[in-house]
Image 1 (cartoon, rainbow, N blue to C red):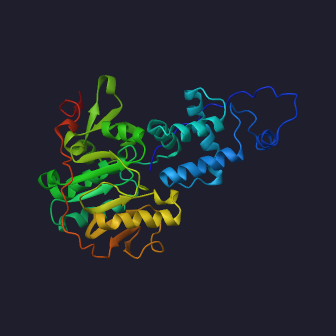
Image 2 (cartoon, rainbow, N blue to C red; image 1 turned 120 degrees about the horizontal axis):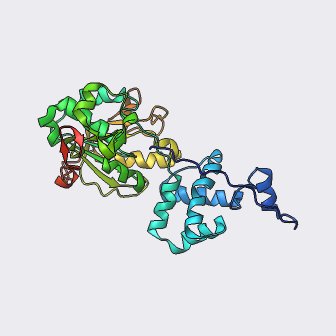
Image 3 (tube, rainbow, N blue to C red; image 1 turned 90 degrees about the vertical axis):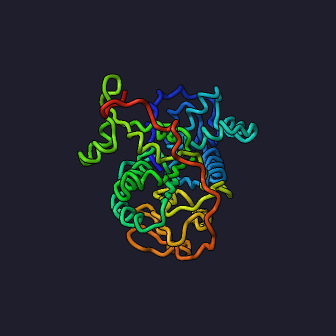
Length: 333
């Protein structure tokens, strides 16, 4: 899923009260938390773990306690609250979709790169020309866009410009902040410098002036990708088309086994017969489902016949509004 957010600068310790410390305060002192702006107890962390699991299926391990504090402390400051209990009470009492979105965004980790886990893309390139056209791929953890754009570039290389214009990539993520960056399609040059000169020239525009040191994916690549918010733990994804391949990489490691099984079960009817499922390098679905068989290194093939005919076509991903900003001679205008 994705780019790790920066940690806030530690704040100086507050003077300690002369009154006897409550048990929860003593617990904080023992764990070296007395220098924080807000008291953060085990009960607070347990409640956060329960809420993020219920809302997004994410299982926070014990060692994520400091991360949870530092990221959610920003929400307390933004809302003018004094304790985590106040914030969590407000979160549940108001049931405000915007605050739930901020809560979820704060606790998701985004680490990604162009052509990350590179062995998957030659497999995709070999697979798609043998499929009935048009080809469609779903990237279910799009993060800041590097993965879905890598998929789109692979489709162009494998199918040619003409074939790729008919292909589509659906890119979804639960985090709306990273999706906004993905839709913009602009990146620091350091993020693409490892790519070959041929790929850089074919798929990116070089920034000039105010955009010096930046690159932008070309409009024809951007036009292949449709971005939408989607929570993989939702019961109904509201998707009405099937896919030749689904990328769900480095997501399942945040889910417990029952949640993994539920997500994989929802993938089945959304895949065309013989479709491929691409997983992360540390993920193993062999003991979670019988519907997919391991075909190669973290690549699974759908073995069950879904029996589903072609469904209602998905909304077109080739919207003119997604073409990006005006361009001139391979530079960002």
